[in-house]
Amino acid sequence: MVERNQPGASTPVTTVRLLPGMCRRCVRAVSWRVSDLPGVVSLEFDVDAGTLRVGGEVDPAALRRAGLTVCRAGPDCSG
Image (cartoon, rainbow, N blue to C red; front, side, top):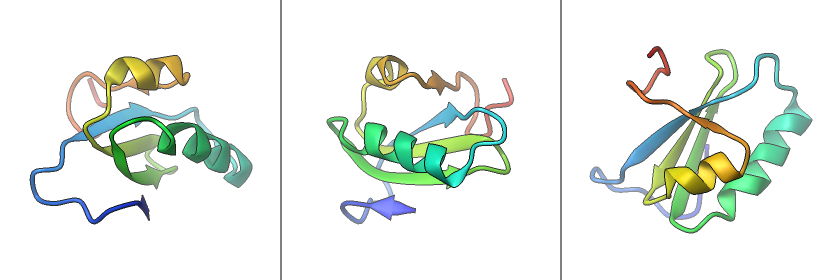
């Protein structure tokens, strides 16, 4: 987990889908791209589940412009 600030209990979280089989270099590249977006306070990667949880008031459209797929249903991207 990469954190800029300690998120509080009310920090919103947006889950995005990662590409299958991401390597460490890919995770680092995504981290650099996403961490600079306005409103991002934390990142939590789960490569096994293929998800990235972005904490903070981040615009989903900005995540899409960064090349990520924002999950529509649930924190596990199952829907």
